[in-house]
Image (cartoon, rainbow, N blue to C red):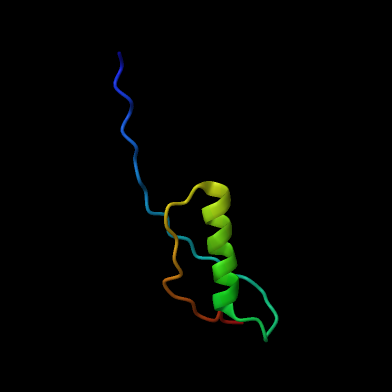
Amino acid sequence: MEKPQPVSRTNLFFKVEIEHDADEKPERIAEEIRQRLMRFYGVREAELSNYSKADE
């Protein structure tokens, strides 16, 4: 009987630039993205570590 392959864990870091209405909070948008990652991709943990306004 073959041994199952060990499961690997990898941390992925993304820089995401979005356009949004001035009255929309970046934290709310980040939370929505986090929830979708968790739901659709089987992500075990995701968090917003920081955000900054992009230079225009």
